[in-house]
Length: 525
Image (cartoon, rainbow, N blue to C red; front, side):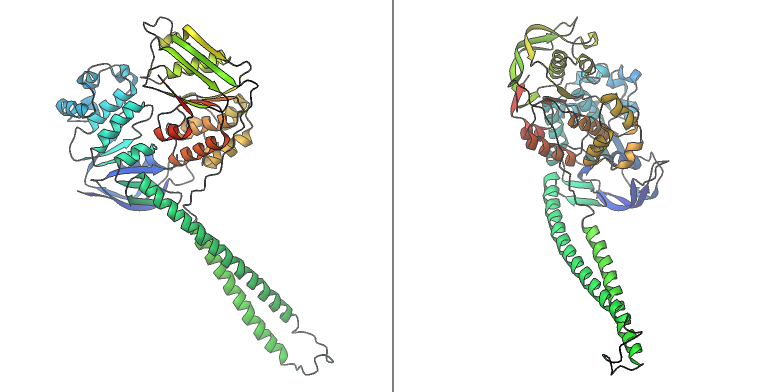
């Protein structure tokens, strides 16, 4: 077992006005299963890249272990080759037999190594890369969000696999995965860094206790500051009033006063003024201590949503529906039946490629959002049969939407986000000030508003899409994997919003805790 020591680490991107890390110090063991948490944009992936030596920094990072990083990069040309040809490029010295052993632990067949990589599903790609990653010895592994875009079955496989390993940092926002796979946490707070023993739930419980204590101490400080201010104000008034009596007096009313009295009054006034100055310094110290208590306090602002009320109770009717793409040899899904009524939050659940996004496209088509449906393409590796042919068509059955239905839609793909916030708001008809206010409530820093969205992290891009959806009054909110890359705190914030406002929703989300909290009904594919 070895240690990784980080001492006085300071780093900022070239041209940035703010440091990502400033005078940061902590130690971690290479034997740990370490969960890495923090708000979007706080620097989790940046820190992994610093460990890999990709950027220059001040301070020191001392480690005796070698590092390896998931996911491995692959160019478009390399995506057309089988993984077996990429092993040496990804991990020099990688032995195929070791990869096969790891694939067996991941419950995956050897044939995935010999198929073109771009034909593999997201789950298969993740398993292949994890098998390569863990095929070495004595490496400390940096695993960056391995479960994004994975269905529930693939997540369970990855979760069981990582729970049997050690010696890694796992960046993830999936609370279920973090609880199952980690024994320590490294948390980037607002103003500090925590390294704690235990999994996510243990850390969260401890944090809530600390936050509660900080609030109670803050109340004490506020009361003390208020008392000090009142006392200082009274003594300052007394000193000023006394100071004014030094010059001039009524000889009838103050017949016993002599010239020496002036010096005595001045001395007493000076003492009071000194006490007032001391009180001011104490007030400043109390304020500084109060600010220190609240530095890491998570106080997410309550979001707002304005769902519309439709005159019909049933907004969507699907009966024995079978859909496919033109030229496909098999349908995307068959004989699907369910209804969506006002106030319901329906989760679409099933393996990758089972037709969930295809159904969403059909619904958007029926509601007159053909362009949005066309843009709802799956990510590479999630292609459904015949998808290149364009929009799906109904082969049999019924898919009906209520007349005049207004839909607010979140696409799982963020690649269309380019340019600045102002142009984005103008294109979508959004109020820019309200839009930026929602992004601030989702903890996007003001400095990000000046950047182009293609420079955002994936989590920040997702927050742009979520903010746009929240700002759009609608009868139905259709969200296709909205939480990929979204930090834990924002997930909880969004959960509270949906439970409070109870909008009508149709959503796809593989975060099991989010689905259990939010869904009133689940449609299994």
